[in-house]
Length: 493
Image 1 (tube, rainbow, N blue to C red):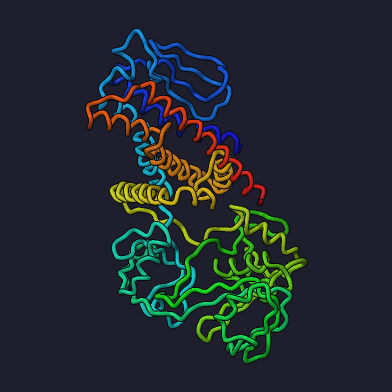
Image 2: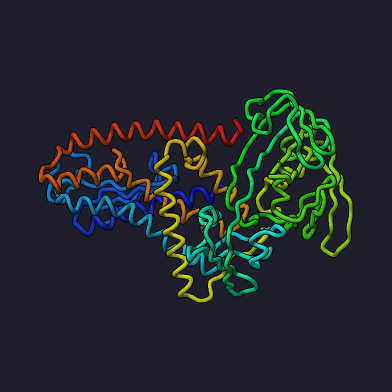
């Protein structure tokens, strides 16, 4: 099923893009020789009035071939691509990316109408925090902050970091509630990870033995360290030390998954709720994140978080693990499972329920408004990501065909909403990336058209196509590079 999704999505996205080129070529009376669906050897074709609609063996993508597009001499010069004025060639080239972007905008309308939009939910409100004082509650969905729609948590975080009073609009019980929250400076946070750890970090932190304080630990990675707390000493090999500086916060954590099963996962049943794992209370997304870290680190490891005088800590987990569960009818039971089973549960989409529900617009006008603003946010975010294009490729934020297949597979497990949202985001991204002013991309051809419009001199079409050919070869090399990165990430390399 994932393969079917992948083929349909990729072919559909590219077809929409090529349809833009095709329609504008027809509009300016450029002869379109072929409109191909897929690549490779021909399966069959259908002859139109003057265009051959070709269906190829590999149903991934497609292309449009116009008369004289490669700069060759043709008999019907007036109907060739380079026989048209620069402004018409520019619009024909621009139409592909434009159709991709517009298709994404249009697709978000039925998505928003049917499912609403996903906004950050509040998972936990810290006692005596600015959030609690302002009246924020667990389960609230953050609609906007300072009149900016909170499409993701970074929108909220950026406003909080300014340290000024925030106007927060939250969705609660079907209504919008406006609250005013003033962020507060919280002390620096240090997170330590120790292997072969002995002792429990109980009470307030006192000192680092044979060191000058916590900051001295950043230079002692992979060394054996001794830490003194009010309740005793902790010893172990320091594997990592992460420090977050003092910063403005309001005292909330955002929601993700809940500890409630929405599908069977042996030995757990639909409706089961995990309430405790090896002594750790589990009631929120934050708790699940901490649980996952414990499993990844493994037994005999220790994670310690120190913020001011507050100390929190967790021991790693491996092997048989005791899990306390409350069933859908309220009965409580103890289940013993391997920690690896819990890890798989947390890594598999669709097993656990999402903590909050999406925000549903009140009427069709709000559907249109939110759809437009959502697409604008995706568009701006995509453009912004291109500033660090190559580093984003390495980190997996920009992926190739294999990576897209993996993302589609994960989305398919979650549901149709995730699949359609992914399609909308990919098609907008395709349009933006194709506008990059690089040879072989639409943006590169647009540059040549603009150059001709400004200088009133045409670059030799043959020279232009040689430049595009070189760009295409480099693009294919880059494509192979991305594919290897995708495969490496897929295999955990």
